[in-house]
Image 1 (tube, rainbow, N blue to C red):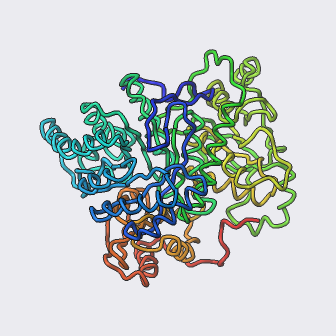
Image 2: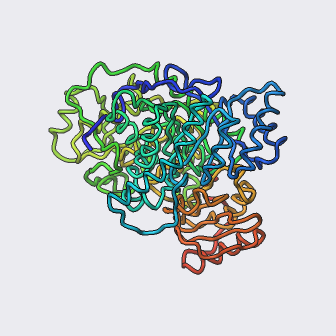
Image 3: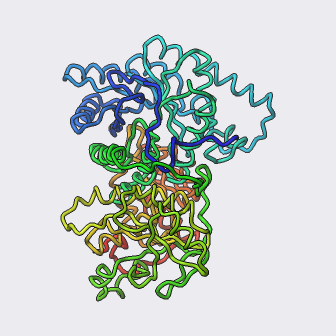
Length: 598
């Protein structure tokens, strides 16, 4: 593919301008603000519960509400849910979430303002079958999809409702997998196949999404989508919906969401967002609104007048860590392929020095003031030139209190600095000394800035200085490294949010699994409420716990199911047994959680 920019300017914020798409009373894209949405968690056949949860979400600031419709019967009940909402004076737009059944989509389209279809399983299949398609066979499959998809497009045209073509990394069809692989390119092409059909029918009320549980995959897929849309022409300027699937709960879920969603918003990509947490849906709204507010504030920050001769210091579509030489800092190696290190200021180190031996693997690894760090203004071409001309290798960072956004500053630095010099990233250029600063705000800002740069491949060490509390700042640093997938220091969980398809209580089950396995450093466990994304999103997981039927659980190793129809009451114990069988189990040394650093 010929290179097309993935955003207007990677060094200056500017929101991507799209066409407007209406979702009921709500305009998405165009000059509209970034919209916040969520999804209810109850059974779609429980009309009163659906109405109650939708009203709660709307009251919390949710602008668009999604409801799953896994069967035609569920889709039919959307009529009564919508009627009940209007009777209560709630006119929030409703989106029907469809997987597997075009018939359910056709019914849902009669009652809602938008239909979301997943191109990986709408009139397509995923059975992990390896098959080579020649061009004629591939075209025959596209013709079959056209026949199945066209009636829905025409119905949406007639009713004046919109469509979201929502690709999920975990549910790419076998046809796409066999031609493009399990890649961002496959995700994008899966969506564009359906978009071409809609456009042939003169239907343009489309919104795209490219969701994945791995932020690096998600970021690359959205960037590639936008690049392909730009390449296709000015009338392909469709809005996009952002989300990280299976982000999990607590700090980890918020950090992973900020890394994926926040970094794309920082590049001007995104017109509507959903933060997917394994918690009650109303808890997603404050996080999403805070991420949107960060984006709005970024639009008010100063911009660079020019970046002469500075090329993009990373490939926006493929993750690769920036090359650097190895250097010795405070008795540890930094750069040169070493794991990304955690640096603290001397005042932080002094406050926790008395309990370092109790902190195990989660200690600070270097102290800024004794690390011989060169602090530089990346807009000072003379200073950059002098550093590049000097002999030897230096540990380099951006100087505090510069009037530059963090992402801009470090991209600018990486674009000019000789590769031999390792880079120390900072979450902010304005250290906080306020012990009462809102921690959610700090978490989201730090995860967005550091996560964006780490997913760009930039950075050999990080310094969190937006949080005053020493233990909390250290925990945040390690959790950001884990969320960005650059350093695994504890058990990694991929946990989906609840919805009407979920076959067990996700919040309770996730808590039970974490209680049993949170000491298994480096083991990745997926917890999925149903099979929609289960096997695919578990591609990177070591073990999977997936709802197979009401009260029954299937256990996976990677993408392969090994244990079927296990009663839910004993499924966690059987998961532990499976981990033992595959040699990944160790007995816990102590009950304390690795994440509770104070």
